[in-house]
Amino acid sequence: MATKSESTKWNATRLPDLSGRTAVVTGANSGIGFAAADALARAGAHVVFAVRDAERGRAAAAKTTGSTEVRRLDLADLTSVRRFAEEWQGPMDLLVNNAGVMMLPKRQTKDGFEMQFGTNHLGHFALTNLLLPHVTDRVVTVASTAHRWGGARIEFDDVNMTANYNPQRAYAQSKLANLLFTLELQRRLTEAGSSVRALAAHPGWSATNLQSHAANPVVRVGMQIGNRFLAQDDRAGALPTLFAATQELPGASYVGPDRLAEMRGAPTLVCRSAAASDPVSARRLWTLSEDLTGVSWGLKIAGAV
Image 1 (spheres, rainbow, N blue to C red):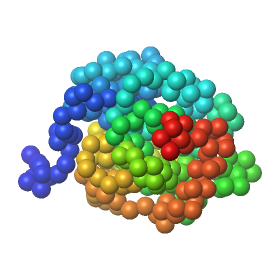
Image 2: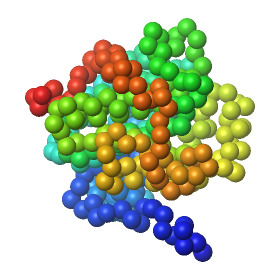
Image 3: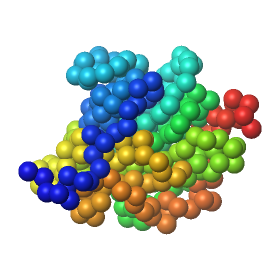
């Protein structure tokens, strides 16, 4: 039985009624993406599963109680990103940039970017800006405590790490990019007079299949041990995303678990590293991302500014 303090902590049963609202969740077919999409649908939202594998997406959506649909989206392919955005019609209340890859062997996206930076950051950067004219409420981007690993920084002179690739550093860079993107996105939204908010969240240590693709076998074994003894399940890991998606929080807020060095617990506001709070780096990354993707500031496209 839950203790009194545990029972009063925020959880998915406290989601507001989301009837009439539309949410898009990238990578919604498994892990915290599925847990978040399922909770949003159960709360009344119409949830779009934006997934690379439509068959797996349909299988996941079939397990959900509520209004759902499945649309194909490959964040490692900017043509797929543009197609998804071009086919979108009508308002979108919530965009959850959840999909990601973690500590992979050296690989490239279809556009030639390092896979983790290209998928976790550039794909979502392009998607958000292309969809922004449709977004009415907020954009939530899933980051990670990995943005602190080893004094992580954006390798502006070689973001693809062609000279010295390291899976852990590449992952940390992509998660730092998620937070800098959120910071600059909120600055631009505020400057444009938009009521849309940009927020970030991280799941703590959640046992999902994300960790199973680590390039280093020693790291994979260590993560399997951590998944067994330290991690929370994917539904608990989705709570920070859901909190950021539905609660009244200021733009640029960052949400994570409240216990065990942010590895598990109830969602609460947490702090970024100094590198993730640097507005100069955030603007520089934005400019670089526009150059790499060919996608510009979304509200400018819509004629709002």
